[in-house]
Image (cartoon, rainbow, N blue to C red; front, side, top):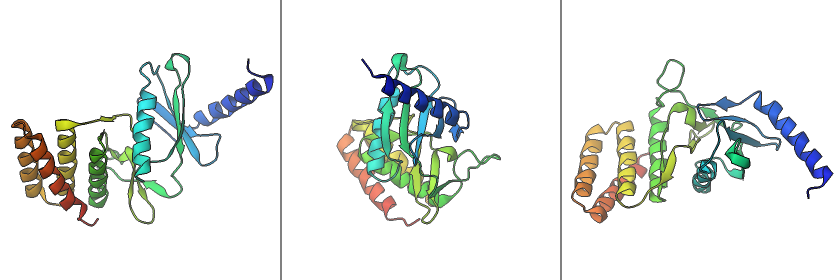
Length: 223
């Protein structure tokens, strides 16, 4: 049985988090982000019941990226009965990173800075080599370092594990998008077509070899 002191402490904490949640840092269709009660951290909390423990899957994928230095560090995951209100606590990077500008009138949409897009493609390729596919890279899900411009990837809600031909395709698509951002559209088209032709022919190993060669070239592009 939990002690009265622990229950009171938890009650007070939830009261503080509820107050923080009323003044969110950001919100989307699936959840809200607000300040944690721990200085230097923020919390992402889902709106609906997380019956499949997606929040744990998301946190695990983000942790992989965080180890690579391209996503905020995950501090913990909290799950509740029925999955209602499950949440991820993570590092608050706003002190050193700022939002990037998107193509839409409101600043959303696909990021318009070629350097951000090249670096993001390089990071997505690195994740693909780790067996992770990260999607939904609109401006609201990417921040840039105030000093270096290095992107930091947010929101791993639309992400998953990939292997085999899916991993090859993920790496190839990220690399091709990087070439396009660098103004090498012809190279991107030929590269993507070559990899996909090999995949369609069942030559997964050869397709991965070509995909890696292209990605190696992308990584050499300075942005």
